[in-house]
Image 1 (cartoon, rainbow, N blue to C red):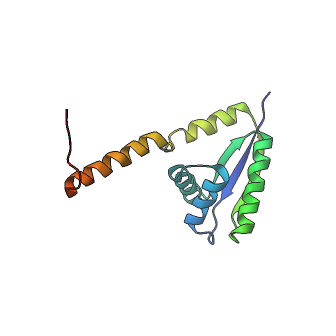
Image 2 (cartoon, rainbow, N blue to C red):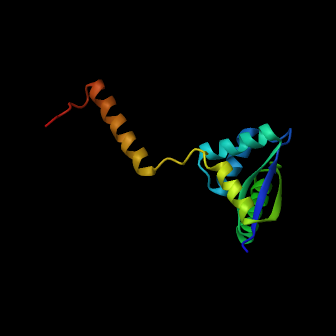
Image 3 (spheres, one colour):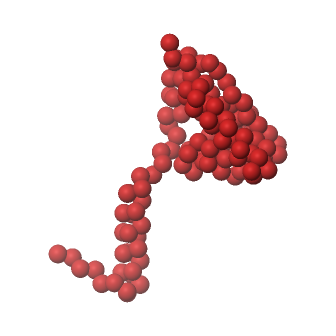
Length: 131
């Protein structure tokens, strides 16, 4: 049977919210929106499991968090949890399925190009050509 391991982040009164978001982005490779949502869960509930995966993944991320807190001189209250069952893991995934997805890089680039063209047209720098 598969076993899963988590990382629980605990709310504290000293760590700024933006530091927690930055730590989550840098250690879990999350988008800004997802990191912000996970930080809010911790803030509102006093704690939240911000990660769940294999024991090797947990170990790697725990080391990343420890290094991040040391290099940023910013204490973050966290602890490893587990083992958890596949049912626990499925419930965690279900609980986090509505988190904002990271935007697709290609669609972001296309949007930037379209906005730039519109701004250039309105500024009179570019003349639109329609066929």
